[in-house]
Image (cartoon, rainbow, N blue to C red):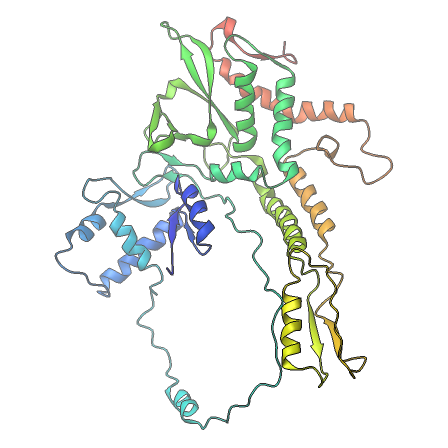
Amino acid sequence: MQHIGIDITGVGYGVFDLVRDFFPRATPIHYSLETKNTLVLKAQDTIQARRIEWDASWNDIAAAFLTIKRGATTSGQITYSASRTDATGHADIAWAVMHALAHEPLNVHKKRRSRWSTLEATMNAPKPPAIPPKVKTYSFGAPESVLTGNLGEYMGVFASDDGQLYTPPVSRTGLAKLLRANAHHGTIPRFKRNLLLRDFIPSAGCSAQTMGRAALDFMVFGEGYFQRKTNVLGQVLELEHLPALNMRRKVGGGFVLLLPGGKHLHFDEDQVEHVMDYDVEQNIYGVPDYLGGMHALLLNESATLFRRRYYNNGAHAGFIFYTNDPNLSEADEERMQAQIGASKGVGNFRSLFVNIPGGGDKAIQIIPVGDIATKDEFERIKNITRNDVIAAWRMNPALAGCMPENAAGFGDVEKIDRVYMNNEIRPIFQLFMQVNRLMRCDRKVNWSVFS
């Protein structure tokens, strides 16, 4: 197996995680506007130039290409999508062919200057006699990749392949997984949720549990969803939380909740209350504010994983084990190599005894490759990235569980809490007050700071 490519735009992200465990070279494919445009342009150029042929009886290939239509997103960007049919699916065969042509160059008519004469002279030149090697070398372990994964990047909002749903601009699954990447990033959204619930006044229309779940979704994904439960008169009596992780907007209006097994639960526009943090590039989905700190977040995680692998591996300092004693036989060299090779992992701090009769004081030397103290600046990286993560959340260090670096500390924590509540949490109160627009008067929600 040379290549496995998996679509991670939707539910395929979970499949990609499973496949990557046994095939690390698996390639993720995100069908963004740029990806689709590149695939289509390469395919058009290749087909129009008659550089590809297939059997005339393979009608499904041509049929699949004909189902792909050019369209535009709500923001005016060009996109390509295929309607679903029983014969071609979502033009799966056509997209597969375009992926095979992805590395086909566009400038095939450009001729490279020939190097035939140089190559011929090199190939016909007499080869010097082979010299047997006199130095034996081997390595004690190769560097390994510590962190593999995909950073959720802003892709823009565009319709899915079937043209039914809008794809979120940032991977919802990726944002949820980032909560486990760092201690501060995982606890700050829950802390802000707790501050929002601290002054919340539950009502018959919305319980503290319902508001707490929607508030946590808002902190993590930049939006929260409620289902409106109405009476026969159309009055909203109760709000029920809908998980933002699986909520999608429909192209024609309305909402869809993605369920296990590929099932969908559809909602009309007036059945869902959508509270979101406005994004300047689109008004379909909410986007969290901390996206600018994700690189620092992942660097913080990389530093931690590297340090764990560093100690578990046992290779704390790379070095060259050098010997020039003529009394050391090949059998002795092989035994020393086996002993050193076995010292990695559990028991890696064992000592090695070597006795060479008649050997000199420099018969065996340990030559460090770099600084044997391995100054990887772990603490400095952790501190800098921690500060970036806290800044991305606009969180005061005194409230984020950080230890002060000076004797004076952070100052009056109660005053810091009041300022943070006024500047950060109360504006979120205002956004969530929109749920009262259609609720019956005796079912409306409120916060103590407004009552």
